[in-house]
Length: 249
Image 1: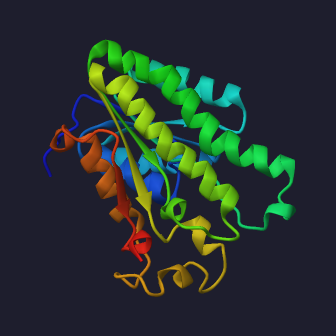
Image 2: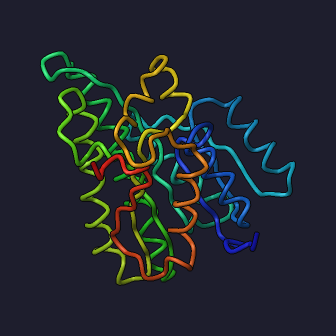
């Protein structure tokens, strides 16, 4: 595979497992120096070791994005690794399902702090430097649930709908200065998180979809890799559904 991202540094949040980890592997395979971040130091260091073992460049930074200080610290530490961040993947996120009346204020704040506020702070800290250099790429990971009125997914879906709108706003704000901002919206995907939902839970979301199967993390990562590459040089503010047709039916 051509090393299309050689010389660039990519920060991927929530990248010690699942879609984030697959994205780190994909971008490292294209030559990027990837910065893996997450709360689990052991998993993060294992991911770095595996990337380095096959000739890739990687570092791990522990980060808890629940607090604003965690996001700001991550941006500062990540930029210091190579002196710049060229690619930002806002992948870290949490999800829960339940009725509106059952959601506590603490759960509401946690969802929005991690899913919306942290990406907002990271973009605010890193995108201006990309714009000053005249190049950069940001991909926000959303979900197909944003286009459906699911009775139990209002909180999660609304947090990701906010990210979809922010993608367009950031594209308008930073695109004229060379920074491309886009979204990838996965459908049902096998990850440690979704598999913890219980047997058959994630599979139930695929009933009646064109693909009629659950996706794999590497399939989402391939879309992210495309959007940060020069092959997507004319793509700004887009929302690429990689969901097996979940949002189409």
